[in-house]
Image: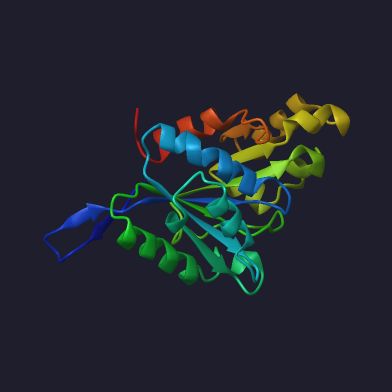
Length: 216
């Protein structure tokens, strides 16, 4: 879903980086997912950069910069200063500018991950900002989340159910939760992960390669 962009004049079109949003409630594991996706994407030769959104801090960006997983210069921070969904949906200008700046500094970048600040089940991404977006929920949040049919759960291009290892400890029937998620999403993709152990990450990267970067 990469877009044509202009660089150096009308005679020099280039393919702009695909922009992939990652949203979900506080504590669902968005930053942990980003930390797992970075090495998995790099291992497949995909040139990436990262943008994190926080309310009034750059804490998530600093965490990723310190991780050693990626060149710190390839990580930008956006401070929303208001409800987190404001800068990914109502007025995504700050995130668009941050992504454009990363593309100017790193012309070969193919994919930019945009992590939203923690939000509720109503969180969605503007299509002006992202080509593809995923919504992350976690088992510990309750197996009724799919049945609540929040916009994030229903509309996301990919629903990620994280922390599947906790299912037996919180009384969740994992397969039933997955089936209920598929039912409310019209059979659009639902993938299960345990980001703590890196389980399920390859399936997400496979999907991004196929559906976003159009690699077979």
